[in-house]
Image 1: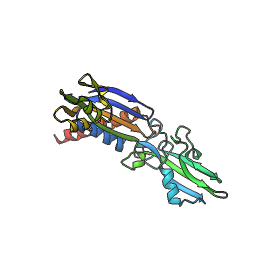
Image 2: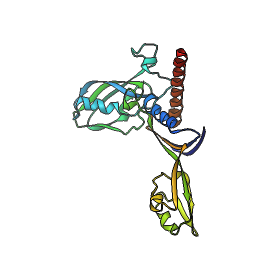
Image 3: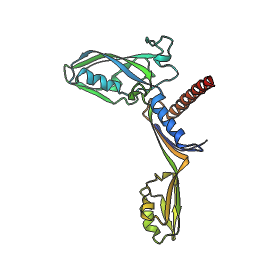
Length: 260
């Protein structure tokens, strides 16, 4: 397979993956959703809560706060030497103790590990009036989207690499105007394609002039977009997903050999 980067942002990466098939890319997508671990608050013990939110609603909001994840320092409870009982290697204590009047933000959570902190500090949790307060302790763990959607690190989606074939047309300007991405330009009486990877296969140009335009998506080359929620970088997400797939394939290979 051949990989070529098209765009790289803080929490988003777009690249071309050549020489594969839809099944493999979809397998990679599912691995990212279900098998790449991240940190999230899993248990909340509320000591005091005089806010307008019910305890359950407050705990739910805290559980969905996106936390920066360190895969080198923590492991999943199922793989920890403590046997899942809970230790410094598989869980992290977080506390919140605040009095109103104020707006409670994610940055008000106090973590024992300064590396594990909210990705978006200004995520609002609750609004406290004078005399109201919240006091709680929480436990964050490393888990995967297979356990709960809050542990999913991001989203991957893909399309076949576009191919646009254009024959001579009587109305090239009108055909070019159909493209919502603006990648068709008229030069003289011919239509030129600029920035082909921007084509999202909407086929508006083909629908307008089926006799002159043919748009197809490749079944071997793909444009892949990966968006991270912020717990991990896009590179960490991809490498961890691929490692997980390789581990599964090795396990399957071993089981098949036993059958033989």
